[in-house]
Length: 310
Ligand SMILES: NC(=O)c1ccc[n+]([C@@H]2O[C@H](COP(=O)([O-])OP(=O)(O)OC[C@H]3O[C@@H](n4cnc5c(N)ncnc54)[C@H](O)[C@@H]3O)[C@@H](O)[C@H]2O)c1
Image 1 (tube, rainbow, N blue to C red):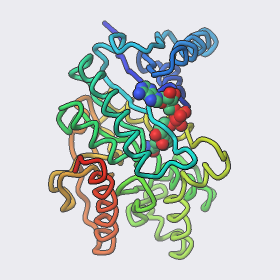
Image 2 (image 1 turned 90 degrees about the vertical axis):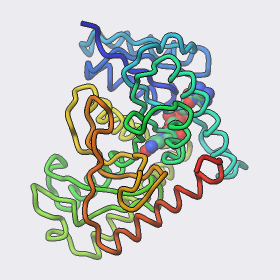
Image 3 (image 1 turned 45 degrees about the horizontal axis):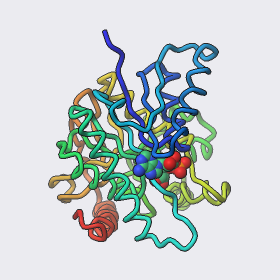
């Protein structure tokens, strides 16, 4: 029986750590692709040489050639540029849209049955680009953001209460950005709603810290952005799909009327299994939560309009 095959496009911080986590968890063989010659080859050789010590037999290939990605089960897209001095948000948006379009077209040609997990920012708009460029159904084009955002929220809740992160579950809806909607009402510690455990004003502070979680890391690092937690989050989605786990995870999914939103990628609870997106779970929102979700969707729409995909 052949092992699963996962392609990771972009051999930068997020891509390389994603490849490492997939291989070390023994989930699949990994093909690491980048536009820079030598970078994916060097990193994959280094990762392969760790295998005897770590103890796995996953094959890791580094390449600049999409032919090597043929028949992948999953393609994780992390390729993109970081914002450089003097570059506007819209310039970055257009540049990354061009990169995501190009890599997805090539990858989709080689692996027409693959499931795409998009990581490149601005996340929700890049998912839309990937949906169009691949021609795949929405079930096979998903974005990673909610798992990361809710992991950050879980971390802060666990620290606040001095409990295990494993007992802590949290939900974050909406676009990946400062308009995301952390849903405290649906967040629990060992089944107890956190609204019963943490005073409302303190909860608000944890929600705000979650929404600014990416920026907080960038402030420390000064150059570059988070990648340990983002890669862990992407790999949780990979594992849920490869193992057909039917896990309910917050992912960016293309909405067609769910939550009253159509034609946009927005973070919602999704059931992930071997077919990719197997169900969008619709939960009842209060008027305030729905308004916050709509505001978040409007922010996604604005970006999609700038790059002409909405
Ligand atoms: N969705 C999320 O929650 C989340 C979290 C963290 C990072 N990100 C995003 O993930 C992306 C990657 O972040 P990073 O820290 O790994 O950046 P990085 O700069 O370390 O890596 C990006 C890599 O993409 C490569 N690349 C550029 N153009 C390419 C092309 N046309 N084909 C193939 N490869 C190409 C670059 O050479 C580089 O190696 C960024 O857009 C970042 O904002 C998203």
